[in-house]
Image (cartoon, rainbow, N blue to C red; front, side):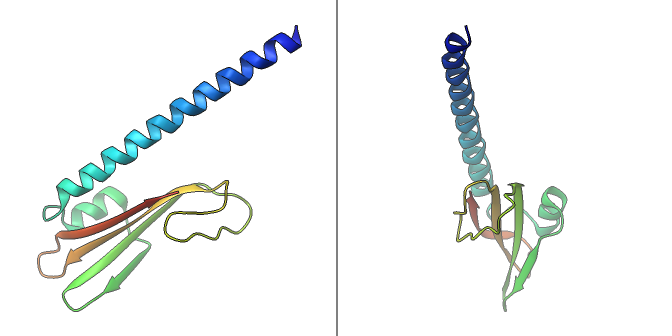
Length: 114
């Protein structure tokens, strides 16, 4: 009986994993489309209300770049991440948004997920 149940359980787990992965890809695509629509529209204040205080801000002469980072699952080992890739066990995203200093509106963004 146990031998008959094991393959069924494995198939169910694989199906659920696949569905979750597809859902996550759709959410990421939707988020990137949203960000694209917000170029020239989203203000820094709106970004603050949506994502909270950025983890980092870099200032230039005419622009500033705010960075938000979110780790969903964090492995116990130290992660070495470079632009969207990390050790297995980590999951999250990093968002760099460039704002015009005068208007405080978004001019550019980079979004990486891992």
